[in-house]
Length: 525
Image (cartoon, rainbow, N blue to C red; front, side):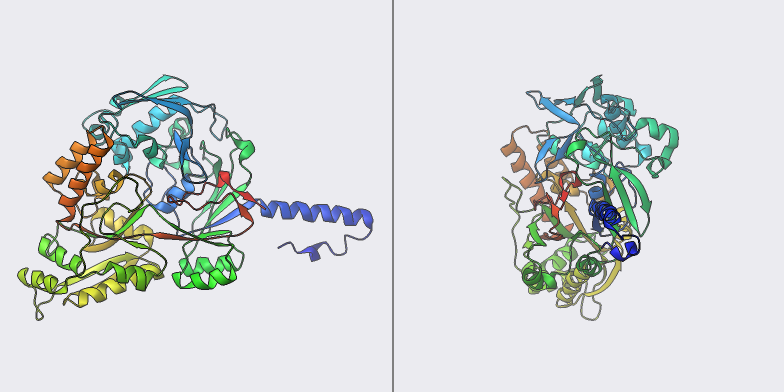
């Protein structure tokens, strides 16, 4: 708050008083033009081609603009491309770029996207999500080191026209391009500064904001990009993404007016907030799946009987209704139930403790020699409650589960390196089934955390990827998912309900199933 006492002794007389009022108004306006957002942690990187965390994606979307983007309500809209055309066979996409500039004033050209897509798929970049663009001609071979990056099916027809050639029809391609993997990065800056290009003093981006400061454990600070094509509609001058230790800490900082927006807070506070701050409470279902993943390359989880037994002991209704208590949707499919047009054929079986015990016995585990597992999850009160409950369910079938937790970025680093037995995992974002089912594909790299491999699953998924018709494609995806989940490499648990607190002074913030909230659309009252 403005401390007007600082002006006492200098505001005597009508003219001085008027000047002081103007000064105070100016300071207040500056304070109100900065948005403070609570983030669940520090980013590991702000290089769009090396990101993996959802929290990084939220920051990056404010600083870059892909060929497509999302509006304030989460719908796909033109981004750096003002429009695009698709060939009748679905294989050639032609994007017509709008006039836009990097934050240093240099124009954004079609050649920037050619460089960026080649960089993403170059194996030297080691992009963990490079598989997002495997549908492009030669992308997988390039990422595997078999073909040079210059052979990628992306061409600049002129400075404002980009052509992308796909190996297989992919009707969801416009949706795939709004992720950071599809963002352009500044070739002229990277060639000058190398990996140091992401430091604030070197930073250049093409979105509504650019990076002004990055202090680990304190804040990532953004400022408006003066060269952004739609600058007149970007109303907020600066943004601070502030890491919070956990959901409870973020909740208290919001109540203390230290943060304007926080995502996630303890579910037990919902009823209180409905009474005390109904105008700040925002709840919405998220396109997401939370699941447990087994490291199937190591015993005992290379035995499907063990994996199935642990799955049969879990009661999803108890997790959602008794533990989480904030309208999460229990789900036995990898695909969120709100994805339109897709109906999973995977059966939602009720817990069967007798069969679970029998399977463990067949696998060689008894009361005298019980199965012992380490269940990993990332730090947070809600995560702890869920995984304590799961450990208790496993105890009912004689399994001894030890709980191990780490902060978010360490947890997912361990998953990517395969350093776990059973672990919490989650996937968010797209409104199509393939985005979730392909997590079990042997070709996607380390995001198939458990290293599951099935020739039958891969063949069905590949067949789906070569199918143009939407209904026929989704039928093949159903079959592929059924094959995989009947081998229990993962245990789908539920889809998330997003809990946000938004200060009423923030305008232009809308609930949506992607939980996407670009600051460029917001205002501060």
